[in-house]
Amino acid sequence: MMSFISNAGAQEPAPEYDRTVAVAALCSGKTKQMVDAIDEVLTAVSIRAEDSVWAATIVSALGNKKLRCSEKSALSLLQSGADYQDALTLSAVTLEGKAPPAPFVNLKVRANLDVAASLLSLIDNPIGEGAEAAVVVLEKQFDNVHVPLLELALDKVTDPDLEARLHVVKALKSLRAPDMDERLAAIAAVADNPTERNRTALVTLRQDNAYVAEDPRLTKALDSAISDIDTWIQIGQIGSVLFSGLSYASILFMASLGLAVIFGLMGVINLAQGEFIMIGSYTTYLVQEFLRYAVPGLLDWYLLIAIPFAFIVTAAVGMVVEATVIRHLYRRPLMTLLATWAISLFLINLVRVVFGTQNLGFIVPSFLEGGTRVTADFILTWNRLFAIVFSAVVLLLSWLLLRKTRLGLYIRAVTENRDMAGCVGVSARRVDLLSFGIGSGLAGLAGLVLTPIYNVNPNMGTNFIVDSFMVVVLGGVGNLAGTVISALGIGQINIFIEPLYGAVAAKIIVLLMIIVFIQFRPEGIFAVKGRK
Image 1: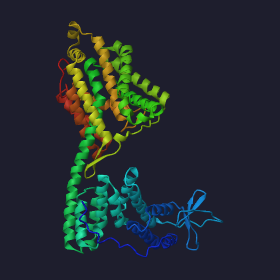
Image 2 (image 1 turned 180 degrees about the vertical axis):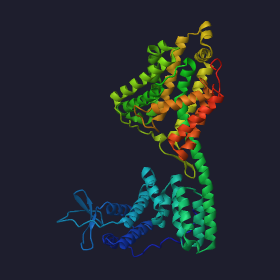
Image 3 (image 1 turned 135 degrees about the vertical axis):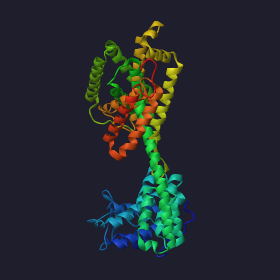
């Protein structure tokens, strides 16, 4: 991307480089001498006149106050605990008397040290998390980047993403190159990577009258580049809103699907549905902790291993609740409402007693860490993409269960007409028990999906119960397609309104919109036969 940018602005290596002179300058405590010495060391490394390991050691020691020396002292030492090394040779030495003080490092020198350490780290370790952290530092402090050493780092880095980002850093550094053609090429290269940081760099130059006065072409190039970046940033913002809305909708769908089955089949307003979500999250936590101590090699896969456990445990709890409480309260909606609320409080306090009130700590699996930049500042994060894909799989399996199995046929029959289903031999009680278990298990899967992206604590379920009921009522009681569409609508509208008016106002506006919609269509988007 930046291969066409020349090195006209690069410093020529200093042939008179001497390690002793460089260390003496670093020990001077004077800003200009220290900055120049850092530059000389980096230049020497870039032409392979100096060892990168020694340079990295000296830079790190100076930044961490482990370089002990002064202008008045002939000693130049590196401190390592109670031991010392010669700063020039890194050989062990025995200190007699008191060690010299560490040179004072001010903010300007510190910035140059951070950049130098990052460049040297990239040269010695061009892969892994350390390389990512080094590139982040270079992106933030591109003004202090040493171009020849950056080019050496580019030769060593193999990750395409890191290499592209380093090319952008080089372009940002070249924005003030002496050669005008190099500046214009740098502006075009920066515009090819539309981010807020790059836009800010170009806008700063556009507002610098002395800069744009040097060549009329700069004004035109900057205006065009800023306009292009603005366009891509807007596209990225739209994509980010849609992705965030889709991920939120997928979580809403997972939380609402079980409630849709229970409410649609039995007409039970289950206020404990949020706590079933919590049970799924806590079951996932227990699986994680078991693997941590029993099979640590599988710890990274705990989220996938926990899927059957989260479903089965939560479904079992739901079936116990149905058999012991709900079954005896059918056709008494107020009593059912109060009973499920009591169950909700019981489960919350039980978890508080057993696990405490603090948020649980979850390990983010390696396959869910980070994400990929699509365009501008729109980053597709793997944990939210996992939630979307997982909810799509659950949707498919739920559809197959309801449409292609005998149990699904029974559930649909009882939902449409309980009495007639009983007349043809369908055991409504058995269907109720299994349906309540399935609905609870689906809530448990929602809890599993939430663990990488949400705070898991005893009160987490209360944040989803109202939204879940809104999804079910808007979509049409017991209708799978309606649940999907209403979850998508509510999720997208929430994410769209929230940045403008805040989270609380967004929920109020969505609730008012649903109330208005229900006035004209009480049965929801899709009406189930027999339940109008």
